[in-house]
Length: 577
Figure (cartoon, rainbow, N blue to C red):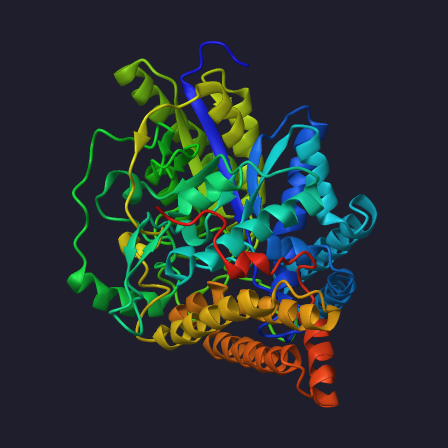
C-alpha cells in the first residue's frame, strides 16, 4: 500500500467469444477463437508475466466468460490453434517469397515480422503455457497478481430474457463453471454488454403486450449467488447521453442509431453521483447489496474512439486491410478517414515510438482525474477503466504493449494505487445505496443494438423456447431416468447457446449476419427437436433410432457445460416479492 496516494486505478478487461468449436472455421467460426487467442489472449498473458519478471504485480481485473473458458480448455481447440498458427507461418513464408520477387523491402521485413510473431506465439502456447491458458490465468490469480471475474454462462442478454429461470440458470451455471476451473467462488461478474434491469412488472418487448409479470432485479440474482460487484456504464449511474462503444466501428449501427435517436431522450444528469465512487445496489428485500463500479467516460473515450482515440493514430497497424492469401496486415491506419486504397505501408518503429507517448498521456489523465476528485472532496476515488479484452492486440495490434506501459507506470507513480476491483471494495467498504435504471453500454444506453427491426424475430424464438424448457423441466426434471436426463440437458445446452447476445450483435452490425442467423436457427431447431424427443420418451412412447443418433450428434457438436442442473429451469429459487 502506497502512502499519500490521490486514488486508485482499476483496469478491467472483458474477454468473451461465442461458442464456435465445430461451427465452421473461416471466415466465421473457429478462426475467431484462433485469432483472439493468438492476437490477444497469449500476448496479454505474455505482458503480465513480463511484468512479474520485472518486479511488478499487474493487479489486472479480467472477466473470462464461462463459454470462452470452456473453449480454451477444450482439447480440440488446442489442436486447432496449432494448425492455425502453422498456417499463419506458412502464409508469411509465401509472402516473403512474393516480396523478394517484387523487391518490396519494407513489406519483406513485415513478412519476416509476421513469421517470427506466429512462431513465437506457437512456442509460448506449447512451451511456456503448456497449452493451458486457463491454468496460466489461474496461477496469476492464486499468486495475487490479477483478479478473474465471471460472466453469464453463454453471455445471454439478461434484461431481455423473458423468464427469471433463464437469468437464474445463466448466473448459477457461471458460478459453478468458475469453481470448476478456478477452484473458488467468483467475487465479480461482468454482466453481458453491461446490461442491467431492476425488478419491476415487466412486459415482453415482443409478442403479447398483455402478459405483464413481476421480475426480479439482476442484482438480486447476483447477491443470492455470492457475487460482490458488477460494472455499469456512466450513463446508468448519472444519466446524460450514453457513449457508444461500438458505433465508430460498425456502419450498420449508425443506421440503427439514426432511427432510435429520434425517440431517445437521455435521462437528466445527476451530478451528485460520480464514477470516482463505488455504490451499492439493493433490492431492499433483506439481501446483501451488490457493489457497482462505473466506467470512467474520459479514459474510455481515449481508447474506444475510432476518430481521436489512441488506436486511431495513423502510425498504428490498420485492422481492416489484409493481404491475401494468408490475411496478414501490411498497412498502417494512415488516418481514421482513409479508405483501404489510401492506406500506406506500416513501419513498426514508427508505431513503437507512439506507444510510450500514448501510455504516458493515459497515465497522466488518470492522475489528473484522481487529483481533481481528491482536491474537491478530500477523498481517494477510483478510475475504473473497462474494455473488451479483444480490443487490445486483435483490433489494436500494439494494444498489449500499451497496457504493459500503463500498468508499469501507474505502479511507479506515487500518487496512484494500482488495484483490482475486489481489493478496492475491501479497502473502502462503500455504504451508500442507490437505484440505477435499466440499460447497457451501447449508444443511447439502452437495448436497441440487441432488440431492433432486424433482430425482433430472434427474441420470439427465444421466448417460446424459454417457456417450453421451463415446462419440461417441471414435468420431467426430477425423473431419475438417465436417458431422459441426457435429452433434457442437451436441450438446455441448445437453449443456452441460442440465448447468446452475440447473435443479435452480429446481425445488427452486419459483421457476420448470415452466420448469426444460421446459428439462431440451428440452436432453435435442435432445441425443439430434442424437446419433442424428451416428451415422447418421458411418456413412454417409442423414440426412433435416428433420434438417438441426432442426440449423439448434438452432444458431440455442442458439448459445452457438463454441470447443468434442470432444477434451475423449473422454478426460481427465491421468487420475486
